[in-house]
Picture (cartoon, helix red, strand yellow):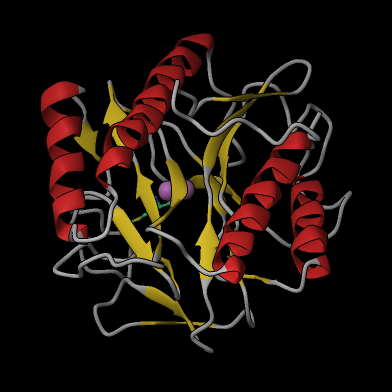
Length: 266
Ligand code: MF3
Ligand code: CO
Ligand code: CO
């Protein structure tokens, strides 16, 4: 099939979906405090998506082959949970770190983004992991331009994570996105520069590094979705949806409350 090149009309719809995804995270941010449950966060996000944004939550009932339908509207991954944490009765407490990953569908197109939130005062190690992972995301974004290779993203992220004593999760990657939630290519967060397909204007994909404070291996919980680190070390993730432009990149999951890129990134 190959990697699709989006038309100008599709790109405009992806800008709208991306902005809504980021605005959903802006909306929920003030509620992410000690005492709230991940289930309440899910309920509020879904209601905002449906009633305010007039969109739908892509994760709800999402069923890739080999998986049971995902039961909730968003993913909430706490502490040593790497990704795909299912919202429920868990109460957030001081010192927790949580990734909230949202994907509204608007007018048939997907916007996919996630951020880390810290509850109260997390450990210095937890804060550092969230910061380094944010920098990994932006280092990956910074190499996006026509003619670059997908391996360029992987190498720059892997080098920075490992230089800082962390490891990169191998089993889950970024992905092409558009009218489908997950399409080609697979955007690995490890690899070799100069390898992989060439980027072209009009390609749209996510970059979403999952970085572990300990070792890279993961396992899946009995719920069939939640991924945790095997060694129980903390894990962090940030995600943006990115368009390849004629001259570089455009971050589509952008909004007023979105954390600015590090000032040392071009
Ligand atoms: N939003 C996730 C991603 O970044 C995918 C979640 S699939 C779900 O690709 F079913 F778990 F929601
Ligand atoms: Co994604
Ligand atoms: Co996501």
